[in-house]
Amino acid sequence: MRIAMWSGPRNLSTALMRSFENRADCTVVDEPFYAAYLAATGLDHPGRDDVIASQPTDWRDVAATLTGGPLATEHEYQKHMTHHWLPGMEAGALSGLTHAFLIRDPARVLTSYAKVREEPTLSDLGLPQQVELFETFGGPVIDAADVLATPRRALVALCDALGLAFDEAMLSWPAGPRGTDGVWAPHWYAGVWASTGFDPVSPGSADPVPERLEPLLEQCLPYYARLAPYALKIDGR
Image (cartoon, rainbow, N blue to C red; front, side, top):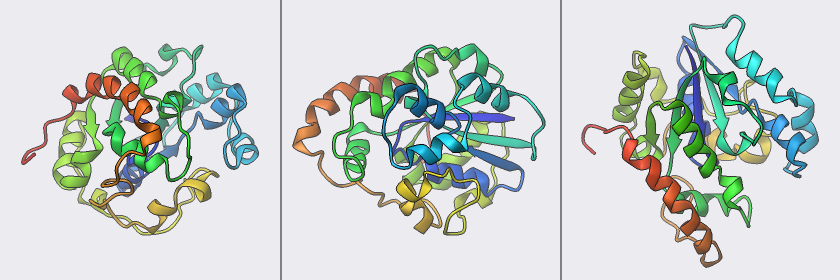
């Protein structure tokens, strides 16, 4: 199975990638459309040149690799950022994947994101793209709050929805970088590198949304509200 997990930034996405990578039957792919996104938009992200040098910049080449060829393990987990999905990219090219969606309360996303980039935009957060992809593909929706509150129960529910057997190894992992991390990891993954599991007190989890970002929060909420009713129901939550 090739699992395409679609998430916005600061949604627990890298920790969930760690969780799946700790399964013996699963390899991972970290943000494969990042270079294509940077090349198409011209945005100046940290480590931009290194990112572009590390991956194909034609989204078609990326899609072909993600959907074809042999797998090193029984399953492959692809960590996708929804804001990397740009107009003109054809969803049909990814129809052979098993799609899933990781969501998070936008208030928590914004308080976390503001710590690494002061002025995010709706486009940076990828919520409209996430709704569009969900409406195109469907698939399980998991809320980061449930993963943090009851990791085992949430991961059991997610695995069940994907048709996978749950593996206890998904609950913890060794600290530090991985060879599968994108070259951008030194700029963004400090928290995950220090982690060994899902921390219920995640960055930004209790902080108020900065006043300057409140208008952006209002833009985000309808998209989250569109997906939240589809979130997997977790026993005990």
